[in-house]
Length: 196
Image 1 (tube, rainbow, N blue to C red):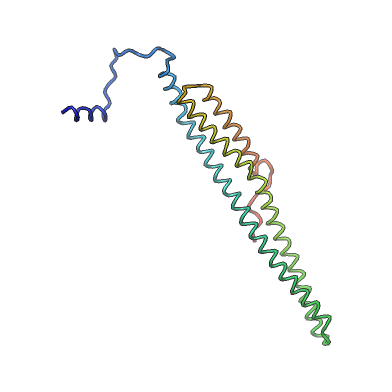
Image 2: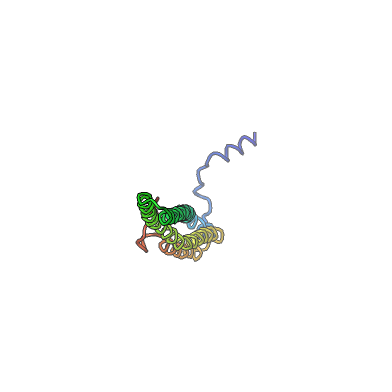
């Protein structure tokens, strides 16, 4: 019967004995309870900041990779148009029929116009990629700061230390400042506008 009683006591809360001795004010267990009450919510907030920061860092990495590939494709297309322009120009110089010369020159001009349009798209993709590259390190530094703030907050619970508790806020504040350096709010330049 004692196993059943033990299990029941484990799953049911017994009313506290009002005559039980209370820990002295400011004791370790009282301070620990105070820090745990505060730290539980704060850890969740810091973890949320870390998650949002990691998502945005992933978005920047994707932008760098996708725009590098897209810009390379545009430059390959530019090169193909350039080769065709050279062929049409050479054919226009070599032909003896005036109507063919006009057709070849018109096609060479069209290839040149196409090249200008392709160049604009490729440069826009490269500019967007370069902007994402500039922002990416700030987001990485901020992630590190958020992780350190969570570690300090956890250590404050274990060590029952209010200085560590408040120190985690300072580190998280630094992470917030670093995050802001990586956001378009600071630079005013938007990412994700130059699509082909």
